[in-house]
Length: 101
Image (tube, rainbow, N blue to C red; front, top):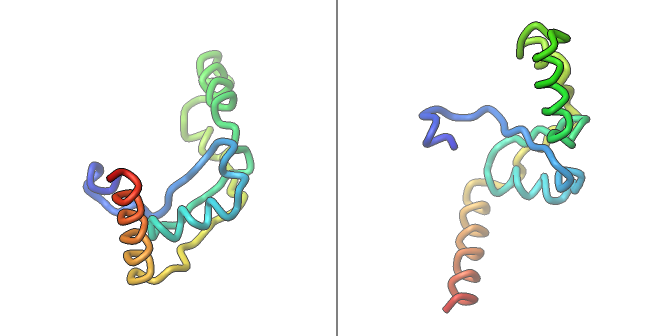
C-alpha cells in the first residue's frame, strides 16, 4: 500500500470479526512493522451502510463529521526487530516453497 500511495503510512486501521483476535493483530503489527489500530466498532459493513444513509439524508454534513465517530479500542505496536521480522518472513516463504514443490 505504501508503494502504491508513494508515502509511508503512520498506522493501519483494521475492521471485521478477525480483529477481535489480539494475537492475530499483534502478529500483523509485527510482520508488517506497522502500528495496527482497531476501533471499538469492528463490524464496519453495516456501519458503513448506516453512514452512507445518514450522509444521504443529511444526518451528517460530510465525511469529516463521521471521522469524529471513529474511536480507538486498541493500538498494536510492532515488537519484532527488523532482523527478526525478516528472518521469520524468510522462514515463512521457505515453508510455502516446500509445501508447493
